[in-house]
Image (tube, rainbow, N blue to C red; front, side, top):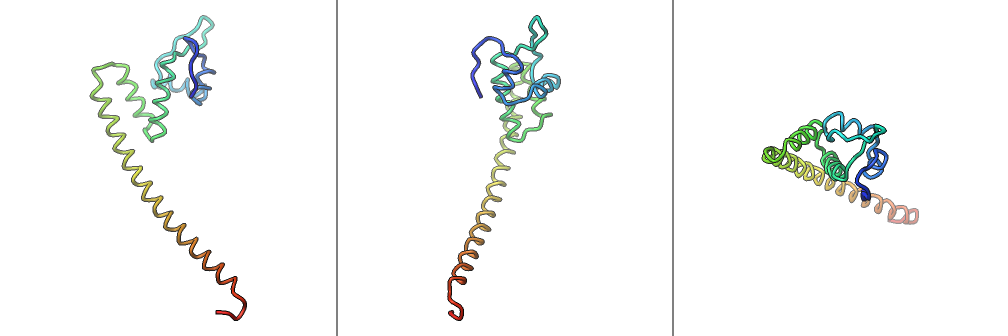
Length: 138
């Protein structure tokens, strides 16, 4: 993601920095995942650099499988301040436990694929050796 050079960022600039569409940014605001955004005199949204940092974190949560409902709940806790630190910590710990379990599951799947790939390579190599022999040879 890019860097912010001014105090305020347009929705287009934020979209470019985060890879999120303007539609998704508006949805996140409406859903309470993104704080209510200030407006310029012309009514255009004016995002701040801390919005970029928050969205980078939201994207990490999303990419690691946290549901939008849980992200919304986390965002609501975040807005309420330090009193919610224990609840936010608990949410992140639970999410990390699930992520670690999922990673172990994926590692097992990858290992099974490795075994199958190795078996196919052996079969292909054996088939090539058989084809290289002259007819009637053993």
